[in-house]
Length: 209
Image (cartoon, rainbow, N blue to C red; front, top):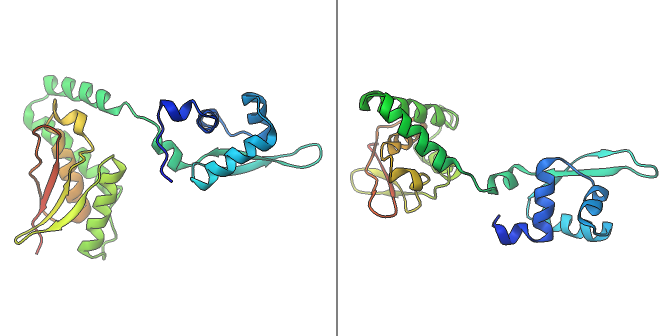
C-alpha cells in the first residue's frame, strides 16, 4: 500500500516512528519509551511498517535476557520525504545565468545530464527496449512518470508529470539536462520537444531505426 508522507501521516503513531528512526536506528524499547507506548503496541506498528517496506531490521543489541533488534528506515522510506530541491535548483540556475553565457550554461546542463545518465547506463549489449526501460526508471527516480510511445518515424518518451515542473517555468533550459540524460542512457540521438505551457509535459523524441 502506498504511503504519503504528509502532515497527517507524521501526526500518526506510525509517522512519529518514521521520524524517530530517521535520526538513528532504535529498538522496540527505545521507541516505546520515546512514544510512551507499550512494547506490544510498538511491535504492531513496526510490523505494519515492515509490510509497507518502510523499515527493516538492521542488527541487534545484547540485552539482559535476550537480544534487542534494531530497526531503521529503508531506502524506499527515505525517498518518500519531501525535498526542497526545486527552489534550490532555481536559485543556482539564476546565479549561473548571470555569470555564464547561454552557450556555456547549456553546456553545463548537458554535461550534468550525461553524467546523471552515465550512472544509469544499461549494459553495452542491451536491446533498445531495455535501454528505454532504464530511461523511464531514471526519470521516475527524479520524480517523473513517463511512458514509451512508438510513432511512425520515431520513438517518444512522454510524461504528463515533469520531474522539474517547478523549475521549468523559471528555467526552461533545464530540459536540456533531461534530454542529455535520456540520450546518454538510450545511446541514440534524442531531441526534447517538451510542452512548457501551463503544467509542463515531457516529450523526448528518439531518432532510432
